[in-house]
Image (cartoon, rainbow, N blue to C red; front, top):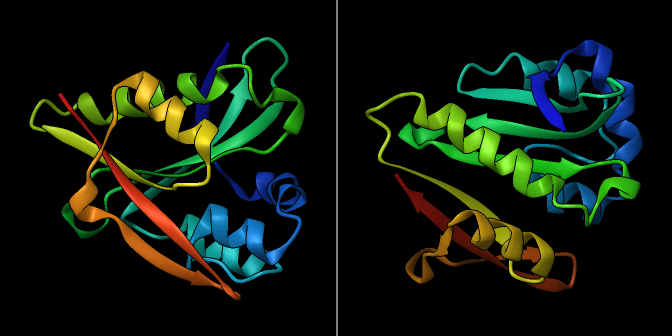
Length: 161
């Protein structure tokens, strides 16, 4: 139903249309981006050497409906910045398809023993999606993040080969 393709300059406008406010930007991008997101930020993003930004494309129509990133920073293999940007496609198990395809890409390297990701605890649907794929919460790696006057709990989840 979906495929992952390279994220390029041609995708910038669609991507920016999905991020409506600063809180949503932090939820998606952590501290990598500053709201409002600009072409300059995205240009720098696609040129980073330890990440591989991808767009999520519907096979049937070629429509771009989301974004994800394979992250190789700090020697980790991490699923990052997963977003189904087009809201009409949320809640349809597409997130699981994205995660399964990302995991398969990492596990093409037979030396990869595990992959991880971070997710805010209040993103119940996302946590459930990752659990359905086989990820488990690593309680010893839970962190807190201050966002405005709120404190968000960031869970680390891991999947072993």
